[in-house]
Amino acid sequence: MNSHAEVRIGSLIAAAGLIWAAKIVTDNFTGIDAFSFARLPRGPLELCAIGILIWLHAQWRRSVRLH
Image 1 (cartoon, rainbow, N blue to C red):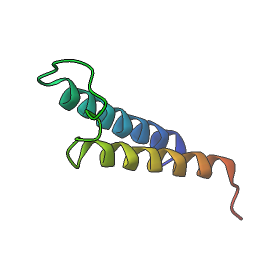
Image 2 (image 1 turned 90 degrees about the vertical axis):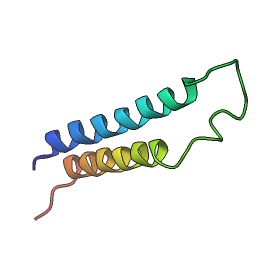
Image 3 (image 1 turned 90 degrees about the horizontal axis):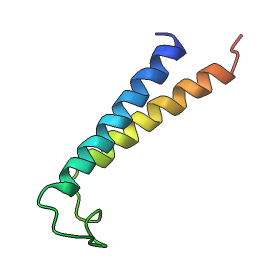
């Protein structure tokens, strides 16, 4: 897989995690609550973190030339 495809996949996975987190936070929205992000279930933020790690790996692959 080339680094361009890896960048795309990482970005899409991170975006999916953010969308999932926003959906969970806005379900049954009653107002601004300081602890609404603290009560997220395990899943959306981990998915976003995996996407960011894949994206970072692709950026590293682009910047390094291995011999």
